[in-house]
Length: 162
Image (cartoon, rainbow, N blue to C red):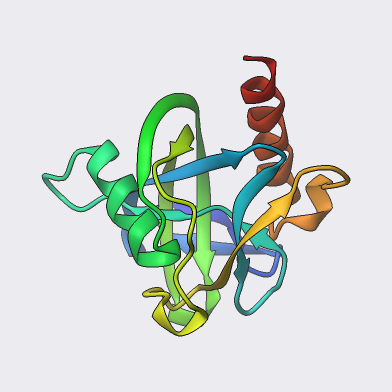
């Protein structure tokens, strides 16, 4: 009998998935600050903000993956980055009927450039509208996942202490 794994869906529900249907997905995300603004994207399908980032390709270094994902999703180049936090998530992506054991690596980043790409230039099917958003008043509930929202706000607070 195949082991069933409880995954969180994109829509915040729980779904049991056979372990043999899941795959590992290492991914990397950037908390990019410019003064009192953070670079965020709108999440398609469920709304709320998300960070630029995504999957690390086999053989690709995480820092290189973050630079690539940042350009694809926002058009912004990264100047420097510092590892911030790791977390994992058992995730079911409803639109594609895919389940993954996600390994999420978060970095605090300084931008090299500030101009975002146009909405039409975003090269990703899950996010849109790269924008610099003022951090004042942001709450965990403003993000597509409140737990990740809290992690992001904690990262911003740590970065602002420097």
